[in-house]
Length: 319
Image 1: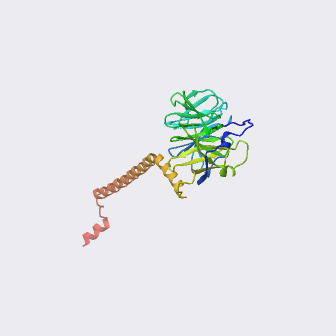
Image 2: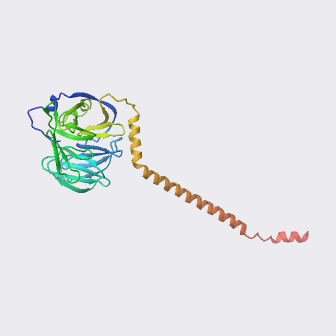
Image 3: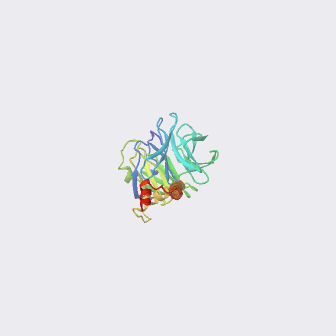
């Protein structure tokens, strides 16, 4: 998540000895090229994204199919947004050097609380028990989600070599997936041992994006409905729904349909209410028509017959 990293050596991940697999592409989607992506999270069919840089940091709700920003909250210019994760009905966001974790209400995207911590904040995920946080080193900090207190620290290694520059995180079961800053790799970390079990090569996508210094791979969101991942990068024009490896069968049309179904599941109460409103409105309209017809019939039955004209009366008299 750094704007610049001064280092004379390659990150340990470049020397990784764990098994390396390539990504399997399911589908690609638009991504805002102005978004300096820091965190990515799927929740109830919607995508949440944090964007960084001072004066440009934000928290966004994004349509995962079109990439369109549905709504967003801008941060104060003094804050540099970092990784995010969903905890219950809230979104927790790290900041880079400010030592503050912001807690947003997921419905309104407004700040409802904050926590403080020491050092830098980079990536964040929630494993159901603890918040897992990176700071650009080889360490993962496990924190209490209630008050952000530090519970434990885990050092990440690959065949005995420390893996530095751990960045954006995604917790899935017993695994913590991490971007490694400045590389085209995602690593799968065993959260009980810190050992890297798998390295995922994402260079096939990075090569198609601009080669700006900061336009690096960054952003991992687990899509549980497909057991797949959405990945993107800083200022990338696309995000990609992928599998890590080639062990699963893929049907080309299924992913978009599944995402659409997921979105429908999240909004079905609103749709149901809308249908009921339309139905009740139509019933009231039909009732009004029936009442009008009944009144017309009753009116015709109660009307007096017209009096015969004088000519008809005279004709009757002549007869």
